[in-house]
Image (cartoon, rainbow, N blue to C red; front, side, top):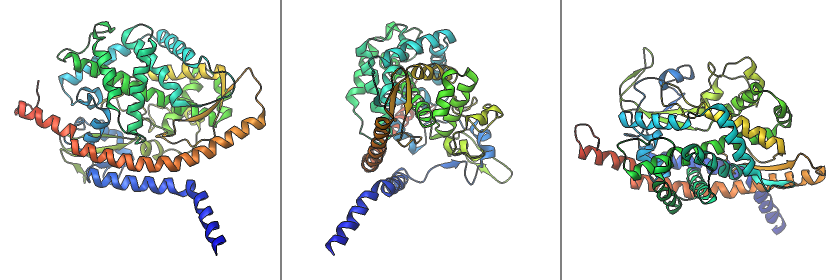
Length: 453
């Protein structure tokens, strides 16, 4: 009898990676829904199907960003300090317009300059990697893009101490966003202090009407939170896809820009950087003869669902589909919609990704056996294999097998960590009510406009 019990216990233990993470994720989603309340209209969903996704997203009344949504408290919590001045979370109006113009001015760089800067930053980031090396791609990419965006902002090479401050800040933000760790506000505030002392050195004038601290928070939120995190994640997804598809990897090494762009388009279709974008309606939206979305509704636009709804074999990586499809006309919005706060780096990002991918593949072949999901909480485990050195096949296979086993078991522990820490942070964000309290204070300061300025 004891032998049977031990055997069952052993089988149960060995099977944990195959069933426990999924159930823990489902429990976490259930908890999040209960804590955050029952707000939100999913799109696509019962009220708005996929055929009207872009139409509703682009509607002029779908223009609220933070005020009036309980979900905003959570995002402000994750992005603190400075979510009240973060471009993506500002309400529409003169301040948003000026902040957006400033961001576009920083990012309006000639293509040749972008390519040169990207190649230089990637080359520095890959120095010292010799022999077959196991890396976490997001960890590898983050210092590279910290240096890149430092030079975009300040117009000079990034010193190591600034790179380390930026990377530590960005890693802390994205780790807490994925519920893999709690916030460390000291890391974030150290970067704010540094940026406040460097305001006189930026390449373009900063938005008027902001205090010195708010200008530092603008730089931190736009360039050294969002830009560094999103570009690092975009490159992690692209390199993971190439590591998992050796044929596409080999073709991309010598392909023209058209093929590279197809691979990027297909990568961002499968693994969009945004999960759900929420907007708050400032007026009614007439969807059809039977459906009207009232003012004050919270719209939850699901990028992953939209990117899969009307594609043939949507879960397959098939860059060739873009030989006949137009990314402009298809159900594909990796950088949002032009009429409703598109990503300001929509032009810059594909250029940097093309150059960075080529620079990596010029030095290494990539292989992975780890799971690849949209949120990539495992940070993209990957083997870098030097192209100028022979690697024994048996050794490579053993390392990939070990990577797969480790990733499976990490997922068990990580899912439990995400459940516990995620539930705590959702509760703590609702308790602190950063967004709600900000707008309440603004309305008290100016009851007519609801603004402090």
